[in-house]
Length: 502
Image (cartoon, rainbow, N blue to C red; front, side):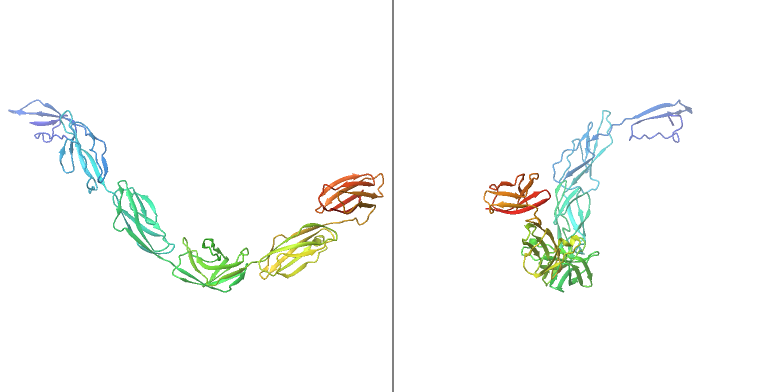
């Protein structure tokens, strides 16, 4: 027999029959002849149909289960299903993956399923990979020795399948899908342990390497005795200091002071101003606003991220505050009266004060008065101006130098009792008065009106009226006892009288 392809070309060498493949459904067409007694027959056509069955549909091609969990049978859709487990065992019942042991094969345990259709042909296999996962373990590595203020790395290595969540003994928490490295900043030699590790299968256990020790090298500063134990504000504070160990790059030395407090919660250190370091000595300026009292002094190093605090100097510093002065005593008086002014101080006595009256503002410069050093607080002194005058503090000082003036000015308002020249005469009686007084103006013409204004000692107007006659009764019964000034004005001329009411 001679074999031909469907297009009548000879198949192979013609004498060998075709071998069919059945892995894919298709139709093969071949032709064949035979020779009998030298005679070749016509070509016979053969159509061979390879029938197939579709692969069954699986619910999940990858199934992940936790060790020890209750598994469900694997799922697939098809006709006359046939299952093959990883051991090669065949069953028509959907297998339940065992979860007793974790999967060791990185590709998973593979189950196969086929279906047989109405043609009786078995389909190709569909694979289902099953992974039995365990709770994780976590191992720590990376023991280091670092300077204080330098971060140290700790490597976290996991087993099991992520994502993982973890907590270390220092409270550091995080989530990751793989091995990772974290940075810690211990303030002293610290042992880091695993507090907890979890994945979706539950809480795991520490692995090999459950702790890491970070050894911290802490440099030291010893603050030595001060060059002076008593200083005024605004002056230079100087001390020497010694260091041990190594300080990190970028570290700067600073001088600090804190008021001595019995309650440690109230202790608050502040930086000395404009600090400078030369060798083992550091100097700075005590701020002028510093309150007087006793202070602790120390040297610190900024040491980026974690400062290094030095010991407290064995010398207790006494800070003397600058003086302040406040002038009070603004008031109203009558001519010939004396006024009292008061100066209140802060800072240490004795104080020296200078003041000047307002005549300096008119171009006739008043003399600067100096109050000799005094320890009186407040300091009270008397002045007797003949007209309204402002008194101004010009300076205050004590042993710490020139201080500050908070309230600098007091004004004495002087009221005159009588006009310098009386163009007319006025009688007021009775004085002292009880309920009323009679005002009589001698020389008042019928064509002129007199204006009367009654004021109390503070300058407040309590009564005003006009009079066109020479005599007027003024009622006083509604006013409290005291001294009053009655001002009578006729035209441009005025006369003032003092009235005492009982």
